[in-house]
Length: 276
Image (cartoon, rainbow, N blue to C red; front, top):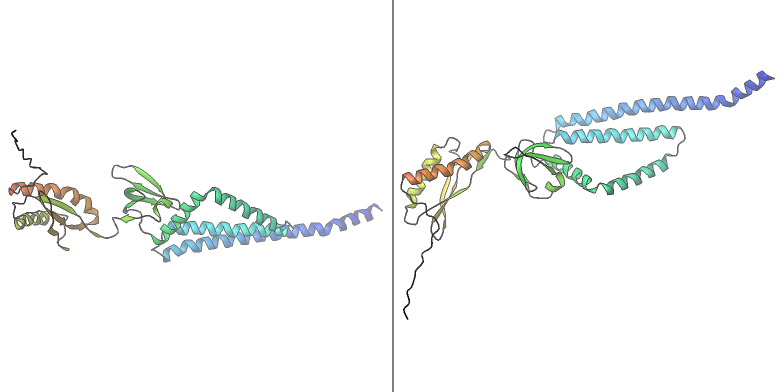
């Protein structure tokens, strides 16, 4: 009798045990295949970065991580479904949680969206000098949420990407050759051709100023007390600030050596003595 009862008990629980064992085995298989697919897709997206050199590697790393986690999420949902868990409610719960998190992190998500756009369109890259978000400096790092600048006095400025995207971005390093705009004033009594010759000579001797394109030196404005020249020499981008801050002193010294007057604003006052 006892053997019959034991056989009945075994026969009663054997199908459930086989079903659980089968589900566990299938869950392991699904998990292994899911990890393999996730890793393969991640590596494939990373590999696309070599075929798209105009796009930043940071964007591909982000997309590869995003794809990997999305695939793994579906894998875990499939595993739960194998064990009879109602995944529809879980998906709805995750959606509601995602909406709540999205509303709470609107600023972070806007920075993320701006970071994606910056990495796709690449208005600047690491190493460029830019003027953006009200700051000027050398770009040292671009990630999905922020852009890091280093100023000339070695300060680190971290700018949220949402403050940059959608605003004016000036990339001072985009073109290899740059023009350097300067202005100089001389007295009305000076000969403009002589002034132009002195300035041309200074520009021709400067080691960083290019012959082609030729420097531009012309009269721009007739002010109240001076004749203003606009001077625009051209140089390599890396020499821009060297030219900008060295040429004015050199032109000042050259004008002084040639006895060319650089006027300062002055006002003539006429005093009328009225007698009763």
